[in-house]
Amino acid sequence: MTACANWCAETRAAEPPADFRNAAASDILYYQGNLMSAVIPPAYLSWSTGKDSAFALVEARRLGLANVVGVLTSLSQAYDRVTHHGVRQSVLDRQLAALRLPCRKIFLPLPCSMADYETIMTDVTLQIKAEGVTHIMFGDLFLEQLRLSRETKLASVGMAGFFPLWKRDTAALARTMIDSGMIIHTVCVQESHLDASFVGRRFDHDFLASLPTGVDPCGENGEFHTVVSGGPMFDAPFPLHFGEIVHRDGYFFADATA
Image (cartoon, rainbow, N blue to C red):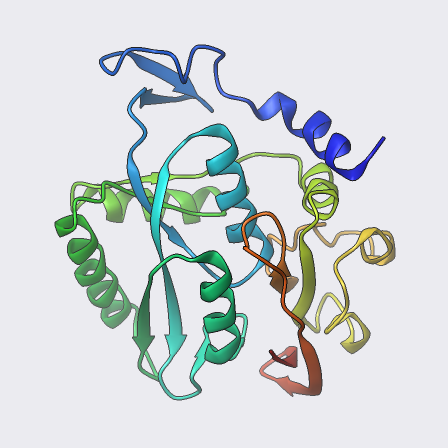
């Protein structure tokens, strides 16, 4: 069976109701336990530069869940890098060119208190809402409190969230991402879970097989973060080069350049 056939076979269970695309605009349907209108809503995608947000976009398009009209990404003002992942803005810009989607970049100060962060993000969501966008999409997998926090904050400004990958089995999901043709590398690993040999590595079936017991295959508990440089969400892949490995604040970072 080809990789594409494997991908289609593994993801068939995630399909929305059969009448989703043909329903009248006034119909209300269920998907992943949520009420949904048959009208495909406009959405922004929370883009981390990694595999989960990338595959959320792939699945949203495949299933017709939302019309993704842009992405938003938070960066450290001090380091000019994507927060959490540590990816250079120049790599983000290569991704955006391949995505052909506009990006709303959110530059966060350092330090950034939770109160400041919430104020900044509320302002951003209000700006997005003013554009006529009703939803923000996330690549979250199973962290209940994180999802609840996102939904509560969006509801406070009259918006809602989409979670196309929610509650998918992470071992199967990781394999599906790989079989879809995505080119994924680790850029950050938490040293309490993984040693430096795991950073800067291709996220493939060999990588999954080498993970220690207890590490989530998708790194959903923060064990590792990734960067994507190819896949069905991009017009074309682009090369990445990995340089110095830096150890900081309990993490190993691989410096990726494009």
